[in-house]
Structures are given as C-alpha cells and as structure tokens.
Amino acid sequence: MSAAGVDPSIVDIERLADWMDTQGLGTGAITDVDALAGGTQNVLLRFSRAGRSYVLRRPPPHPREKSNETMRREARVLGAIADSAVPHPRLIAACGETEPLGAAFYLMEPIEGFNPTQGLPAFHAGDPQVRFVMGMSLVDSIAALGALDYLAIGLDGFGRPERYLERQVERWRAQLESYASTPGYPGPDIPGVDRVGDWLDENRPIDHRPGVIHGDYHLANVMYRNDSPELAAIVDWELSTVGDPLLDLGWLLATWPDAEAEGPSPGAIGVTPWDGFPSAEELVARYAEHSERNLDAITWYKVLACYKLGIILEGTFARACAGKAPKATGDLLHATTVGLFERALASIA
Image (cartoon, rainbow, N blue to C red):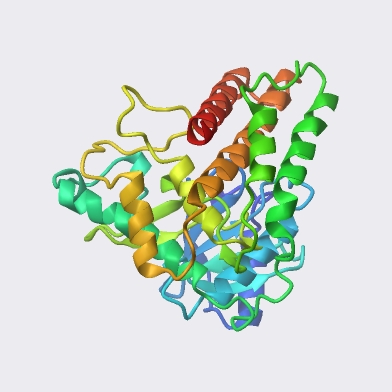
C-alpha cells in the first residue's frame, strides 16, 4: 500500500512526518506504507523514512474508552524494559498526546520473525527438537520479565501490586455480573463459575512478590526468529501491569494444548505440527530453573487464568447477543469460555 492509499482518518502521513521532524527522526517523505495484521483492535502500520523502517501502533479509528491510556502504558513498559533480556519490540519514540494524529501512538522497530499460530517455516516445522526449544524459550522470556525490579526500571505506579491477588476474583466476578445489563444476554451459562471463584478465594496464595507481567501471554502473542527457535519478541503489551508474574506462567498453562486430549481443547492455542513442544509439566520445571519464585501454588495461577480469560471472552458473547459483535464470533468465544472453565474444574477436582 502506498502512502497515498492510507486512509487519512487512520493515520495522517503528512502530520506524522511533521511530528517526526520535531523528534529528529529522519527527513523527507514517508514511503513504503503498509498496514500490518496483528490484532483486531489496534492499528499497526509499517513504513520507511530516510532509509529506516518503522512500525506505528495506535488505537483503532473509533477508540475505546481507555485506548489512548493503553498506548501510553504500552510505550512506557517497552521503554522500561529496553535494556533487559526480555525479547520485545524496541521503542523508538512515543506521543502520548492525541495530537497530531487524533490518538496517542508510538513508533517501534520492525520485528523480523513470525507468529507460530499462523504457520511454521520449514526450519521449525521439520524438527521436533526445534519445537521443544521454542516452548522453552517461551518460559525463559517470562522468567526474565518476572525477574525485573519494577522500581529500578522506573515502573513505580504502573500498577497496584498491593492486594493484587486478593482483588482478582472480586474484580472479574463483578465484570461477569455487569454483562447482565447487555440486551439479549441470557446470563452466564458457564459450568462451575461459582465453584471456581470460591475455590480461588479459599486457596489463594498467602503472599507474592510483585513484578512486571505481560497479562496475556500465549503463543499468539509472540514472534519467533526466522533462523532459530528463540523468541524475537513478545508483542501486544496492552494488558501489562505490575502484579504477580506467576500469572503469566499460569496464563501460558491455561492456553497450552493438552497432549492427552483426543482433540484440541477450547481455549488452547496450538501450532501445527505440535509434536515436540514440551508438556505443561516441562514448562513449569523450566520456569523453576530460571526463577527464584515459589511454584507450589502454580495450579492456582492456572485456574485464575482460566477464570479471568473465560470471563473476558464471555464479554464478546454478551455483545454478540446484543448485535454488537458477529454471532459466530460470540458463539465461538462462549465455547472457548466453557472449555476454559472445564479445564479449571479438572484442575481443582
């Protein structure tokens, strides 16, 4: 897509160039503009200027209530982890104001790599041992993220770590109850929703050590290097905060395919071919090798991830019932929610 073909209501290329002038980011025309896939909400645009490539990330044309704040938070956390061992998109510059583009945005370096859920290159598809290392790289990356001192890297006030675990069930139970006001929503036909919430409250870990969390960590939110089984970057940081880093591991386990299941479990995020990827138990063991955190309650974090993610997805089903989202999408995500709660129930049986 050429610069002239970009809808100016999404990104005004001329105003972007003017802003880049003030930041000392090249001179001359912006060229080679292409819209990138990578999410259903935010806009990703790749372009070139003065021989350098950039990716712009901004909210959708019709931003949600907190879209601009989300962009500011994403830019802040990417800047904070810039010198760490955590693979991530490199932040170039950020604009927290709604001018000049009508929304907050930031620029980052392009990531040379691929998302495994969209298909594997021959190197990765042809060797089960390569896929085993791919799984271990997932764990190594969140272990590195969880090891960061959030105060030392400038993320004081980025989240509310006090009583983080104590707030979770109450927060997401209230979210589920709020769907009742959605026209056409029949109510939460979710197996064990009260039982799972009660179990989480009754078995909550006594304490935790705060750290940076990604908040939505699974195979669809990472990119791998084209030439190795290592991660190129963790992407989509919009749910990042300061909380309990073990929730990232729990989230990975909640979405990890069950090797013993006859078919794909709803809620699982897999890759084809799957053979060679480590088991959930091997993921936990790997994390333990690279972290000083106590993993005795890791099942609790997995169940919390099932609970939280399931309730988030049920929100789209509620909106579909009201005609505000495609019915097929709503039905699929409701089935995913049911699968996540079935997984949670199996974990606490």
